Length: 417
Ligand code: EPZ
Picture 1 (tube, rainbow, N blue to C red):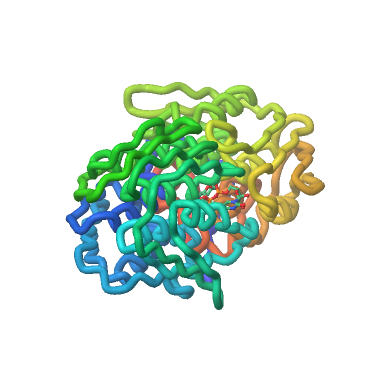
Picture 2 (picture 1 turned 135 degrees about the vertical axis):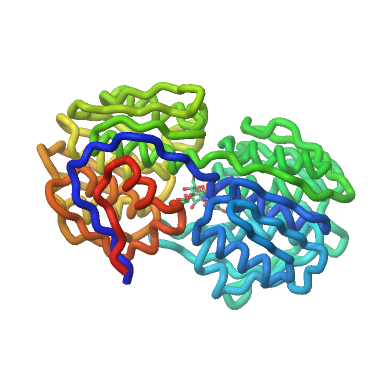
């Protein structure tokens, strides 16, 4: 089992280059299934989840070539329309192949993702929307099998809950459907806008991406594309949390302040200096943090993917903070590990109450999921002594070379195999 070891209380100073966004790269990789032409993706992060998605596309018969941060994908010779459980269980975002596969090949068989550490993670909204667009669907032995022999047709889709991958699946499916699709209560994040931009490059007709109402006029065929993946706002937000905990001053190269408006306003409010420069986002902090009240919400609200990292920061803030996790039903597992480091946190359903303490103490802790592992790195950077984070593989799903990036700005962090 791999472990990450951190010796805390070393201020961070220097430049960190932000990698391409995991949650923008995965849907755009899925969009390559919509065409038989070659697609080039640049600035793709080197992550386990990207490798898993390449494996999934390979299992469909796609031709995938990676060199550095460029991934060339060609889905001209698709020989399978089944996403197998052993691949899907590793990465829930595999569900993103459902929409494009049904749209282009008129059938798909995709293993239901199953739950994960942070929640049940149903995909009913994806399936119901595709059914409304003309696909039949039935669930048997853990797989969803969908058929649309006449092809999909445009529809008025109203999501009862804002779903990021649900919006992405329907956006891709609608691009090849007959007629017009309107997606209401759509997810609005930068990753949706990036996917829509790519689909438009492929010849799709998409309006309103980034708002809660997206209109798609289906076309008969889509072409290949060459697209650079946007910077990862959650990685950037994680490093803002890191400097807020360890103190110091770093430049987050290529980071986009607009994609982080809500969390940045919160961090400024608790005493962190953040400005956009021509190079990226400059972050510095040398004071004890103030307390805050956090409510996670769909974009542009406070991202649930930064909640765990913020909890580590607020554990050391002056006074009482609260965090309301409104997106996932079980996303406080990092709290138990922070308690082992001396934090004072009480959980009551969706709400965590955090009493700031003077310092955290290094300890042996366990990563339970991707963003929880990031939270433990943040806490380790601030703690007195050494923290050993077990099951470190979780962090590799969503962070490229995180130890190297932190070592380069003065952190004492390394990996024990
Ligand atoms: C995306 O997951 C992200 N993953 C998650 O990031 C992120 O936390 C999440 O959106 C919320 O912003 C990718 O983009 C690959 P949802 P997704 O559908 O699409 C419920 C990370 O750490 N729901 O927006 O799976 C669901 O249970 C990951 O990078 C249904 O009930 O999340 C949740 O409560 C973690 N039925 C809420 O909606 C459905 O059919 C939002 O989920 C779909 C979702």
